[in-house]
Image (cartoon, rainbow, N blue to C red):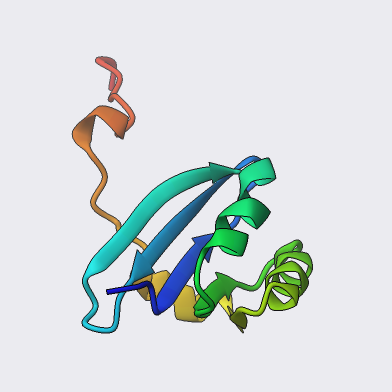
Length: 99
């Protein structure tokens, strides 16, 4: 099955892409550099792309719409439930021995 929906997390240099098919199964999960985003979406079949509304989201939405994708911008409050709070222990800050 092909990708029917993509979540795009924008950042300064590395963007995260999470694509699912019609049944909700993960089809693609990868990190893209800013220079790779347009070429990735040009090769991807037209689909729904969800982006958190931020400073650069309107620019990227226009670029993806020009490629034929259906783009939806979401307020940050709607994106929060999708953010994973469970982080690996190695990424957690270490406590100081002093109290």
